[in-house]
Length: 411
Image (cartoon, rainbow, N blue to C red; front, top):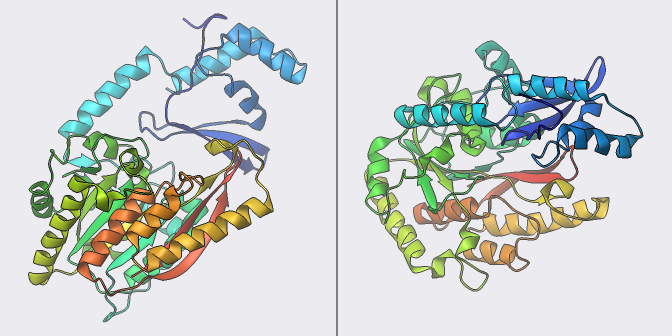
């Protein structure tokens, strides 16, 4: 029962999104965990309440904090009623949501499909609405007889609304190139994991049909790993970095889309350093050298392979733990640093790229560090002479303070 002593805690992986409507500014609560298909739209002022929903403050405490903050008294019963609404919509951490979470995870383990949990939230679920949404950023114009062959590509994984024009630069080039026989896609495991690489055999669902995972290639990679590749595949369940790539691939190619191998990459900084990049870590380098042998064997089988990375770059500002204000100069400095890194990426200088970021302990918080490193090693294994072309770079403001940068590159 929710009383004045109740200590509300917002559910994990709840995203708070500011938006504008005809009635003014609002905030939207969105569940990135996929446990509820509801969204809640509230007046922008509600954020003053939600900031105290951390499981430490009782409703009485929250009332007192709001009084100190605004010199206004919100009646207890109004706060209780608001908390009840969040509870009914499954946006609070409690025993009810724990049971829902356990059931959801059990269903994921049993299923052959990795559900598209961001559909209806980050992008429309209805195909007609989705196609209209995607076409605002990119109109599919397939070349009848494409001659261009791509070996690699880098795309963002930020929300499509924020990064759609940069996504479109990458996927325009992919869509107008020869369709490969296999896509190996590296994404970021934002929620961690112990394994360096997290595989899954599950097909990725999209509104345009499932993105089929190549089970044969999965098994061939399984032979060169020192652990079970899908021990931690639960991290694929809620991760958006590859879901958005699956959506774009199916959007541009539909039924012609080839099979892929989706791989989430965890944080290599745990066991690497500026002095000891992954190439100096014996078991990691063995994986990359064994992968090179495998990739070359696939090439001998006349398979065309595209290496894809779904990554973002720097994350700056209060939202990401910085204690300084974001200024134009900070944005300019970050862009200069990012572009220095992108030049190393274009040159396939994986170790130099890794070392340059760790020189300052990854002070700009580049989440795609390890996934980009993997993509570069794989691209170089296929074609060591190829070089990348930087198509676009952008920064998107975060409404809660800060910005995220991302880019488009093709090889």
